[in-house]
Image (cartoon, rainbow, N blue to C red; front, side, top):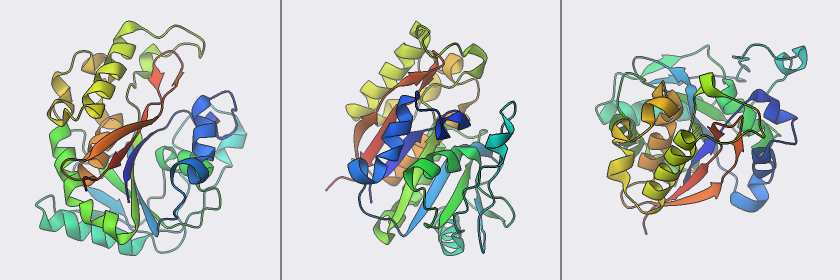
Length: 262
């Protein structure tokens, strides 16, 4: 299995056909990944904990509506994917033995909108078991890359690893969808694209020093899932840009595929 960083945006993407990333996600199975994974591991920027934590769910994942200010319709949406308790225990095992433990288990938490919005478009049948893994805002990008490396064996076990976040994510600066993209956002988006596509992963893993990092990521939670996905692809992985669009002037939907070295 390749690993992926998939941009997520507003929950309105579920129905808003003007958001370009919507059609990209809807064509996922036909255009990007025709093979069906045994399970999905989602690393979402919307779950931050002090220690790595997995949601260990026997039964159906709850749908978490962790957003405000939307019409009632959106709070009725459900993505009833089965939990993946065996995957959760496997993630815990891999991370504990790699020095990232003790990994905690959350037996009540479902899927936040950083997980289910994309999956609702990618796998609308909601039949594939899903497990979530948290990020640690208090840690570094390099920490998350190494955490991802510990998860690399999952690729050979039929698990699809997806990091869910955004390349640029400053909600205080959002504007209209047809507004101009400010230079600080486009420059950071371009810097990261060039670094990934040219294999300059040391730069990516030291993104805290990148120009415009603080402006684009007042909190790094939406970028760290990229580092996990990149690390999980292993040393020498090749990055491919598989989608690129913008909304709200400052939200990049750049999404990447990471293919392991042969």
